[in-house]
Image (cartoon, rainbow, N blue to C red; front, side, top):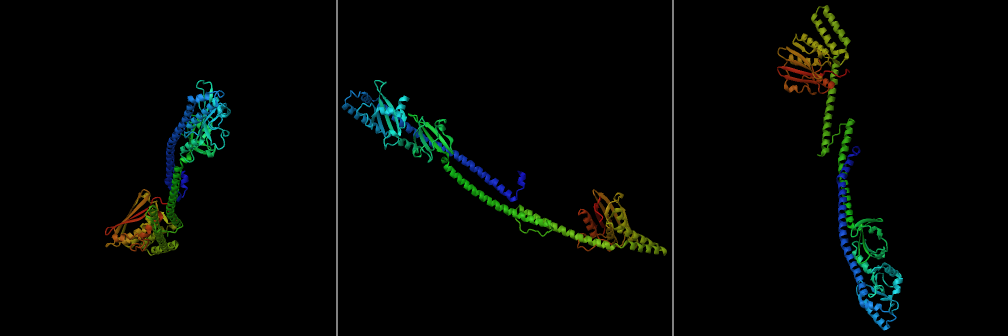
Length: 593
């Protein structure tokens, strides 16, 4: 993962960082908030549903209890029992009509209950009032219908059922009924008839509708046989009703979440006292969470707005940052191609600004170093030119010197012979057969030859002492390094004294990987104001001796050959002399070119 991160562009890394620091926490916060609020909404919905379903179950229990109580009143009423226990063949018609009036009056009294739609009595068919088809019906009709058979077979005191459609005449609304047998109070083996109370299904529907806590909630009554007694939305038909197995296995009076088809619902059921009914409540979870879902969508919209805004800011910031970096990279590529005219004029005070500032400083230093090296190269080429100019054709020079030497011997002039031999040695070592690198021993011989010549000229004015360990004589050094320094010590140091006499002392030692030579004279010294200008290319005083290469050229040659750690350094005290230190590698890798 980290290696993949390394291949990303800088602005991509910034965008990824913004996404990680802003978007991810917001997404996590939104998800956790939604989960917490959804849980709270479910708990509040359950509390509300528990309250409403509990109230409805109580109302339905009161309705079933009052219905059964009415059945008991009719069944156990002594007058009603005596009237229905009469033998129709032996009971006069006028008395039967009187009983009919009393029975209808009794039924009408019960029907005053607002929850009762009709009270029916099924009596023996022999009574003259057995078939008014309002409150009184023949017992054979009850026994011939399905609910009558179920009542007889069940043996229950009260039997709840839904009348079949063919039992109700046209215009009769859907009903829910409860019936019980009327036993002869004097002989329980005999049945006087059947009592039935009809309740409008709409009465139950209204109570169930009042139980709904959401528009999409469904509340219904279902009996033990799986029949739907009533439901809150009867016009919808059987759609949306969960199978009984969905809730029968669940504990009563508890709420559980189930998935029915593609819909997640909250489901609860409880028994209705006085019947075999179960009050089932189904609430779609999406409706419970409708408000929370709307809030979640608002949070998502806000989150997207924040993400877009953060992305826009990150894009601008990354563009602003990478623009400077790309500009800096272009300038660096120009440097690689050799163009140093790449100074960046405008930069800020941030980290990128510091980087640009350091880049400008590096370019300035690099330009200065290159200019310095160019000047050194020019000086070196000039010094080499002067060196070449001073190198006379060896054969011509040697032949001329031999001729002078022979002439001096012929005329018996030994001083001339001595001078010629010293001069021959000086030029022979100086030319070195065209080699640029010679041994330290050869350089010392070259310097001694020069001092010998100068002593012939100035009557032994210079004493030259050498104290160098013989182990250093094999070290290699650029030729004509010591002679210019000795020349400056004589011409501009010793010969400037009043007595024009002095001593030059050359010592040396190995310092780790470097060789350090010290050329010390007791001349007039160098004033402090001129000492600092000796290594300046603009300097003119003491820069170049008439007979060789000056201090500046020698210093530049050593630095170009071995690096800036090597070269010359001077210490001087006016009136007491000068010390020149020469530093060069003890094991030189400088090639002879």
